[in-house]
Amino acid sequence: MLRHQNPAATSSDRVLKVPDGFVVRRSGNHWAVAGPTGLFLVGKAGPVPETDAERTAMGAHRLRTGLAEVLDVVPFVDPVLVSSLEGHVNGCALVEPDLLESFIAHGPRVVSEGELQLIRHHLPGVITSIELDGGLC
Image 1 (cartoon, rainbow, N blue to C red):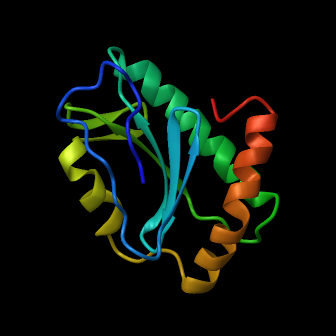
Image 2 (image 1 turned 90 degrees about the horizontal axis):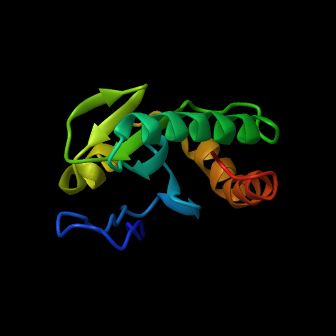
Image 3 (image 1 turned 90 degrees about the vertical axis):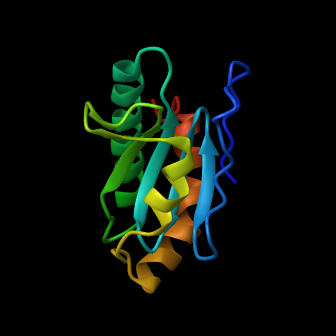
């Protein structure tokens, strides 16, 4: 479950309920989401989306690097910001809250079942290791 924890959250914030086959792990203000459609690092855009996009992109890179230490094949980690804006900022897709689940869950399959099982197995440990080393961003 992905929920925005900001006390200043608006009513447009939604809970992301991903379908079976996905795994979600929280790290600070970000959520790593892995499923058959890929691996995503999701953050919340604040007043300065450029800064949040840069942090999320850096976190996505750290996550992929961490996974590469334990996996032979690691998919690209797509940085995503939940925002009322549309488009891309600093390499991050901007996705409206109501469209986040669809954006993540309804794309083409890019991760095989075998790869996904390995990611599911290693993701919690990789996130913990990154947090012990200062966090995703």
